[in-house]
Length: 341
Ligand SMILES: Cc1ncc(COP(=O)(O)O)c(C=O)c1O
Image (cartoon, rainbow, N blue to C red; front, side, top):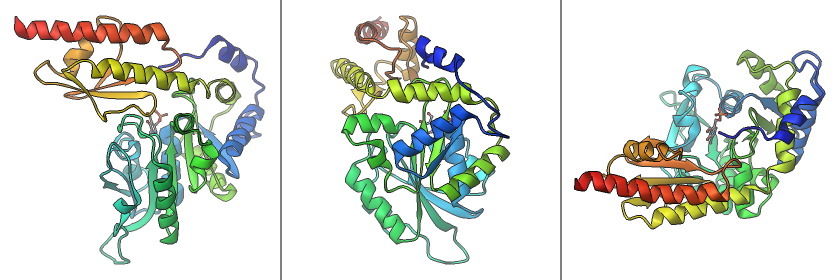
């Protein structure tokens, strides 16, 4: 939803570029080095989207007929068109977490025995923060325990860190610390960081070299990609610390929601910049509420018949949060009045 800021647009306009498919693009290479260093990995590959970085990670780590373990509501399993199956011949096995949070004991006895009837368990995927869990942050010690368990059992680990910088700002832990135990890590520049396009996959040199080959086959080889890489560099330089503002805005919005009886936060806390709440069916549906809010210039998303998702970001300011809370009150009154009539 974010638009590039004027200074981000200037950085894009002035970017030094080359052909990244043939000779390499200097700005893209600078971004790749920068993100690898921040995540504490050997190297990284810039890609057009988070879906591509995740799907290429799966392709890297698994063979057709393999399975990966992941949380039941995660993006890879639910929101990427089942590309792990159609593009790579894989099976995803969901483990039910709590608002997206997995603990090490969820994995107990989940590795398939070596048996010709069964898919081969190969990979663990963790999402931090968890989108459908409402931006929840994975508990650090549990993530460490899951990765240690996975590696001890010969499994590979991939972190879908589309919003890893949010997790870092919320916990005060560096993205390097949050990535340390993972073999590969995917991050997005186009979400809270506010760049128009782009993600990166980081990991060992050998794996990322193969990832670049897959990237070409998946249609992700980009020519003068420095123009968009410059936006990502600008975001890394200027838009990380400010994520704390988005988190504070989400908390204010959460408080506004908690003050309204027909609305219920799920979960009952705000970790980062995503707010999900349930609409009491007695008031109406999520679609009814989003329609009322849209009429008042507040844009939120109905993600299930009774669930609404709202995201705070760098284009949302203090006054707009106050407006949103006021409009929620108005919309709830309007819908309550409709039922009373
Ligand atoms: C956790 C997570 N991973 C991956 C993606 C995919 O990113 P993209 O939309 O860039 O393909 C998203 C998108 O919302 C996401 O929330």
